[in-house]
Image (cartoon, rainbow, N blue to C red; front, top):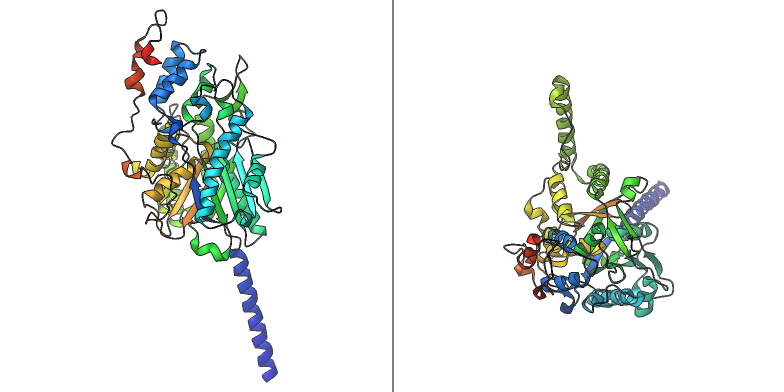
Length: 476
């Protein structure tokens, strides 16, 4: 009897041990954000209204028609006059960029951001197990990842990934790479560096679809520390709940809407097609179809299904009211209350139209899109790093509380739509992050008006006649 009791006890202990190991192994696969640091370039790189006028006037390929187009684009872009551009623009060398210009721009970013986030968390560069770098429009040899390893003297066995050409949604792709590595390796620390190199890619021609990129894209970047270490879990800020990546590269219309190419004069630029909104909408819809069941409660999904069923019944009873021929440009309405499962919406600052489109599609309020709108106004479209400036705004405004869920949505060339949900694992409402890029100006946001002064200064261009137009000295 005693022997039977002993065997039963051993079996029970073994089962408890196996269950504990299973739970522990799953926990080791979780992906946490330990900290992040957005880059704030120096004030001598700030693009004011006056600087913008000087840059435009230097381009000898532009005429009155292009001036009018640029003025309309800048005024309606949602971008203010405190964004940042690469140094060569202020030196008047945008038509003659060198490889070193792009590398120096990236060095300025990663020396600042990576250095700050490592120092703040008292982490040595040799503690980094995984390094993922994404800069779409600069490919150098050695790679940017290798340059970071050399600068910080990282270990020989660090796992390295250097991504190029992945567009504005690349930072979530980088996070996805880290997440998948964490499934195999436990107790690791990862560093993601996300930015964009504008220096070699400033367009100096007169193709409208390429000039538009100069109006939207600005300098920036972010370094993100991620981990699945148990010892660091209590220090973490966010936990990754789910991620969905949608790629429409197989569709010719989507594939060709954002392309780096040469114009008729051989000048390289980034082409933004007129069909871009349509491609973005398609990718967004397909992405929502997959991620919605993962992030919303069953009750909301059932309510939506019931609503669709009732609508179909009404259409069958009265087909004349079931027409789906909507006018061109009509915004997509999801018909689902995303606020039943999401507290905060972190939207890519691709432009005012992108933000407004998502606002209408998800039926969001001005409060919901304020972080994205203010980020676009203050920092512009910083490509793949823009999401982290939006997240930093939420943190600086003390919006993020433990248990809140943050829905990140990004778009990129290809055409891609990537999204994910983060859970806030500890209160971030105390403004504890000394490295928040918004700390110096958060009390000024949102301003009473985000109307930029370009129309006030250059509005006279709209009344000019092409036959008599002459650039006055005041414009220069």
